[in-house]
Length: 249
Image (cartoon, rainbow, N blue to C red; front, side, top):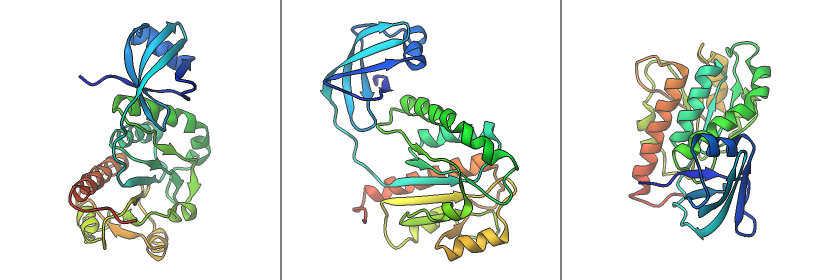
C-alpha cells in the first residue's frame, strides 16, 4: 500500500515542519504519531521521512532518504473562464488529480458579473483545495494557480500547442486535433469559455492569436465537465506519445 504524502513549506538541514491547521489535521484527524514514516514533498523533491514530533498544531519530520522523482512529462495548462465557484472548485480538485500543471482563470465577456472581484479573494482557498488534492493523488509538485486575468492576457499563453475548446458544431474533436499536431509538445494549453459560451469576437481573437478551435463532440457539457473531460483526453494522449517517441522542445 502506498504511503501517504504530505507537502511541507521547506526541508532544512534534514528536517521539515508543519504548523497550524495543516498540522492539526494530521494530529487530530489522521492520528499521526512520532515514529510513523511518510513521504513528504517541498514542491521540489520528494523524501521519505519519519515523524519525530506530533502535538496539537505542530508536526516535525526527519528526512530518512531522498526518493527518485518521476520523469517529467508534458506540462498542461488549463485556462477556464470564471463560472460559479462551487463548480469551479470541484473542477480545481479534479484537474489537480489529473495532473494539471497550471490553472489560469480569466474573465470572459459572458462570465457572470461579480465573479472577477470575488475570485481575487478565493485564490488562497483554491490553492488549499489543490494542496489537498495533490496530497491525495500523491503528486510530487503542486499545480500553480494564478490570479484571474483578462481574456487578452489569457490568449498570450506561450504553450507549444494551444487548443480552444468550443461547442460550435462541425469542429474537429480534441483528440484528433492533438493527433494532427505537427509533433508532440512539452507544453499544451487548453482554454475554455464560460457557461454562456464564447462570443464571435472571442472566437476570432483566439484564432488570430494562434489558438486552434476543437470540440468534445455533439453533446453540450457543463463548464466543469468539459474541462475535466478535455484534460483527461489530453493527458491520455500525451502519455501514449511519451511511451512511443521523444518529446519535442
